[in-house]
Length: 335
Image 1 (tube, rainbow, N blue to C red):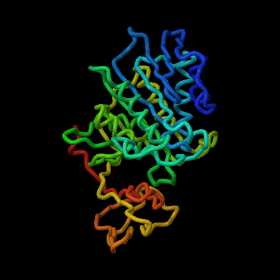
Image 2: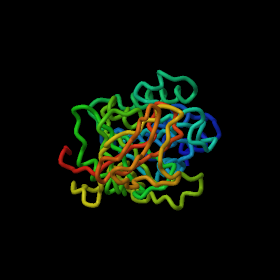
Image 3: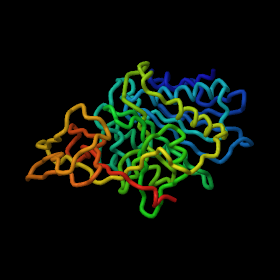
Image 4: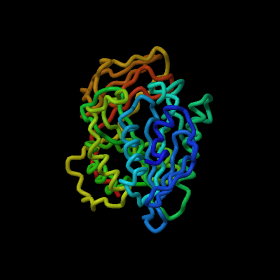
């Protein structure tokens, strides 16, 4: 196997490869760009016009997606997987990956779309570098652009595998992409309705990629991900990479759609989230329930029918989102 296929090993060791560019026997070019970043380019005659960005490890302790990308890279480096797409593999936060921590000083996935310019430190610099790498990769005209940012969640979830679909003014969400997600094992999709500061929102909004944050289960240490079943996603990614993806019916049967009703913003140290510490994502909340409280008698009271909570986290910094209140959505506004 080519040494560049061992990108994860290089990243965990904090080493640069001796050779920055290597070719497989099939003529696939692998090029090391920077720490945790590797470009894969098929021979020109096999290139099908798709640019695919696969990122994981934006949070360093979310290891199942990192292991998934590592397997795909090994297969490419051995010649078992024969790409027809250009691919950029990114391990988002190498320092946090080495430490086995979600982040070192600040959450990288809250530093995109200009936020890193308002901050400092190594993780702000890394967010800036990730934007630069993505922008350079997606700079070629007249090509399809697809980005999957792979995650696992801090907590358990009543719907284990789901996606977040970013929003941009004047752009409709794609029924075809939702059907593709369903085929890849996603059980639900949150259709966002406002700008965001996460990585997939940057590539969707600024680089015109179809982009998604995928949540694949619960975060566990390396080697302990038997409970995170990514087999459907792995199969679909291999098909996308090799250009053998079957035609996907655009029916969305079995895929639950949600929209954002409200974001719960933590304004001060007095913020209190009135939920059990072990509450699962997609837990339902009854109308009238006092979800959260903050300074100046600020209260978030559930008014919506069918409301559920995802990503509740009262430990975020002041000014950041401490949870998302979501409600069921329909597919009537899809392109």
